[in-house]
Length: 112
Image (cartoon, rainbow, N blue to C red; front, side):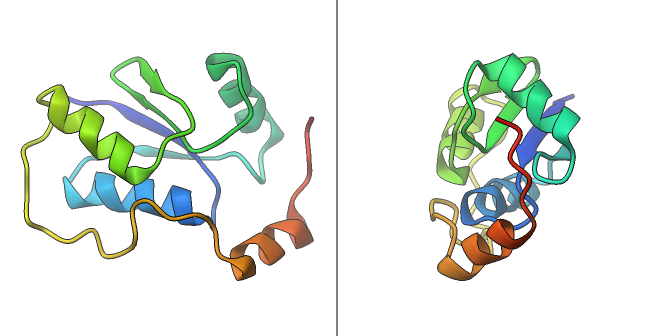
């Protein structure tokens, strides 16, 4: 059994890439909103020692500031998933678009 806790922004290219990889491999995961919940953001910073996201905890191992591609590489390298030709559906290694940044600026509360 794989346990995954993903510290993600609700709307972000990197975060959406991580979600897509986890779904591509059929993994259940806890999607932790670090934008709208200050306690979640603080927990991520405490666990990782840094402020960048996404951060994904897999079976107790923290992958800090990763893309979907990096998460997938970790899962494959550690035999947690098998290679698949299934498409992710979105880019798995892409930054936020200008529109996504604008949306976050409009409602983001900075905690640092």
